[in-house]
Length: 128
Ligand code: I3S
Image (cartoon, rainbow, N blue to C red; front, side, top):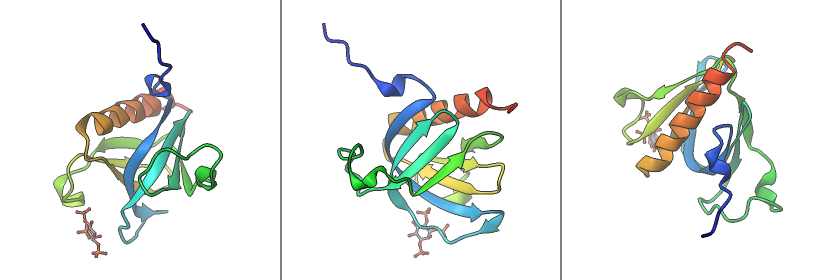
């Protein structure tokens, strides 16, 4: 049998394409701007790079510069309430710095895996 090393097995090392928008920045409401983004969970950092939804060219491409990075320490993650978005499968992520993001995928299993990974990461780094 073939063993495939899957980076996504480890809760603190995960990557993939998600739809992302900020809704609050430094405590102030900002206009939604849903963007398909290559997303990387690395330790307690969540990195977003702009992408077209194709996940093939991350390493060694011009997509390797993160658009923005979120520090998960002291943050919170929950399923977004209906009034936050009309989309299905939306996670609301709040940082200690007062930034709120919505992240979404049309694919149940994908967003459920991210929910689990983000929750585990936030719980692991809760007291830092
Ligand atoms: O929470 P809102 O304001 O209903 O969010 C929608 C708008 O941001 C809309 O853009 P404009 O109002 O700038 O045209 C977006 O196209 C929608 O995707 C936003 O709502 P959803 O429910 O998709 O998060």
